Length: 114
Image 1 (tube, helix red, strand yellow):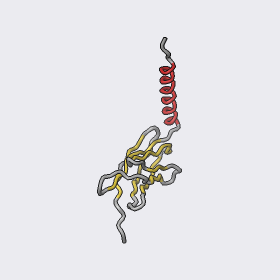
Image 2 (tube, helix red, strand yellow):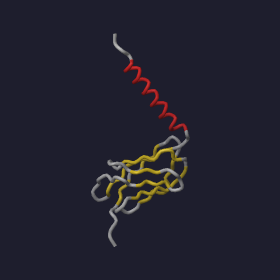
Image 3 (tube, one colour):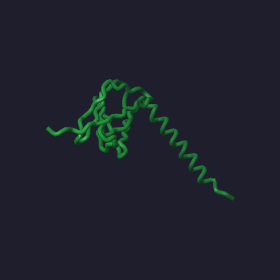
Image 4 (cartoon, helix red, strand yellow):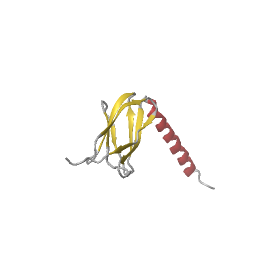
């Protein structure tokens, strides 16, 4: 007789994942995500700091240049993108809404020597 344990485990994990995902959005917050690239080469930038001004949340871009900031209270924000060797950029009037993911892709320019 075949064991149904693997199937039951898969169903349980799927349900747990769905419940956790649903609860993440129940708290009334929004998300900000996107990619950061070098403006000259188009290559993804790793380690870019993404800071939401007037909040306690932020993120760092990964090896693909992707970042995601979760749990941002609804409101209008200024977002700074900074990385060593690059000019700091900002996005202004970024409106975060409950249950919504906002996407901002940005290109950073190399910081020129004085």
